Image (tube, rainbow, N blue to C red):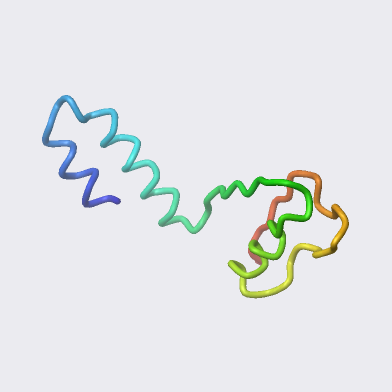
Length: 76
């Protein structure tokens, strides 16, 4: 993303896109990002998130279990 932002900076009409890409590259380089998962109840969102994380962090149930915003942080 940083390389793409650098290329876009060369074009004045793309300055806004370049700034946006550079900001996203910086966010990702810092290891923090926001991921939104949404869908119907019991559609597998928590299972998918757990698969992405490589461990069971969110509860999984055939009944609605995580009908709230969840913030997952790496241990310090």
